[in-house]
Image 1 (cartoon, rainbow, N blue to C red):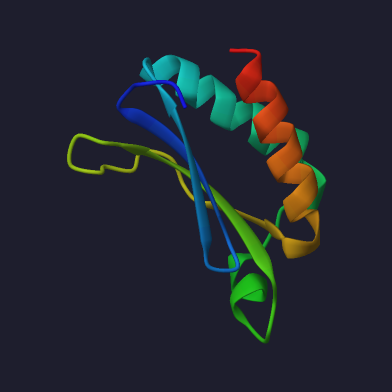
Image 2: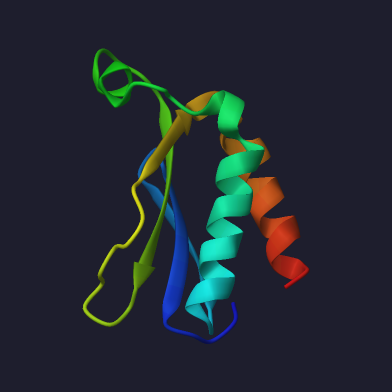
Length: 95
């Protein structure tokens, strides 16, 4: 993991994974890249994700200064977890 105070994270099935960035703009661009890449897997209605026994993947960002969150959580179908994780890991290597 790179040192920094800006985080991108994935939450899924009780697992929490975080990638760190030195610059907020780099982290925000990374978040947008992931969000845009998986647009088709995103729940368009968050209430649908909360009803029933739905498996979800959540992406979000945090700033370690007070753990402030500046972007909305995005929720995706849980069946896309491995694909999202692989994409994030590969893209992070290229930063």
